[in-house]
Amino acid sequence: MLSPVIARIAGLLLALLTLGAGAADAQTAKISVRVVVVTTFELGADTGDTPGEFQNWVERLPLKESLPFPNGPRALRYNPDKHVLGVVVGSGAINSSASIMALGLDPRFDLSKAYWIIAGIAGIDPDRGAVGSAAWAEWVVDRDLTHEIDAREIPADWSTGLVPLTRSRPFQAPPPPAGIFSPNAYHLNPALVDFAYHLTAGIKLDDTADLKGIRAGYAGHAAALEPPHVMKGDEISSSTWWVGWRMTASAEDWMRYWTGGKGVAVTTAMEDHGVLNALNRLAQSGLVRPDRALVLRTASNFSAPGAGDTAAGLLAAEASDNSATHLSAYIPALEAAYRVGSPVVLALADHWDRYANTPP
Image (cartoon, rainbow, N blue to C red):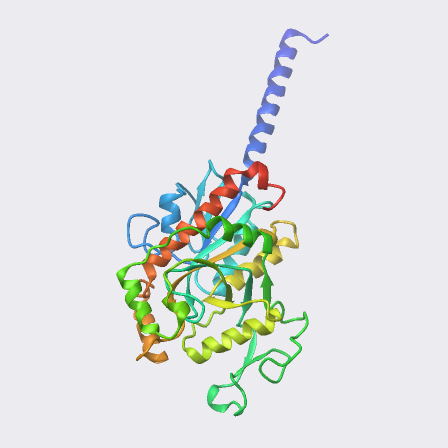
């Protein structure tokens, strides 16, 4: 039988071991994430000044907690009640892919069941939609992995200087099979895209006098004249910010080529092929679920000029500073991204008992 002193010492040691184990568990417990909101840039502070893509989410969802993210361009934001995490990934595929890889490998987070909603502004094809509109994409096609010949040197019967890698002519059939240059096309979960679209299709978007004035320059392009609305529309993703009618037509052809005619090019953005590529890489280790990714792009500008303007004139207007605030429908597009994206984020987060294991 132990003496009272030894028994007390043994009890204290056991208590200390228990406390130590509890502290270790607390340190290794991961932050549970239900939805990740992915944006590409912010201007100035996260709140209270001229907004970028992140600010509406931080202020209105809200994402009150700031978490350090030393391997990304900006601190993360988190809502612990709804388990929603917000990230700014940076502009262009090189930044977005690096940021998503850094987040996916961050040991603080459990992202194994998280949904990912990319919510950002974009250019829009005037033959497919109007500025201020919001488009849920089912297809995202990479336009960066190409051969290219300068347009002044292409054969007379070519419509573009862009040629698929491993091919010798534009749109040469069949499209290259999976290989060292893949993937070129990402097909998102159609059922999840339909869920997001049908949940938000009836949302009314702002139609300002400025938007009406912008649309007026596109007589003869019926889709460009429509008021802003929510639609389904696919995306050409390229780190090159291109403009003009010829390149817009080439983008439409590029989408048809890589999707077998199933996709319709509506928006153009710079980051989403990088994000989706990173998610697919992380999925190989079981860290994320790419079939839970959504892409919402809202139109801040047209990809081709209106009547009386030129591609160079449109480029000059869009490239006038380093803030993106000069884009013709910048503020309405930011508003549309939050107004359309947030109901989907809240539906998934608030009904986690329904969607944790089974996507809608």
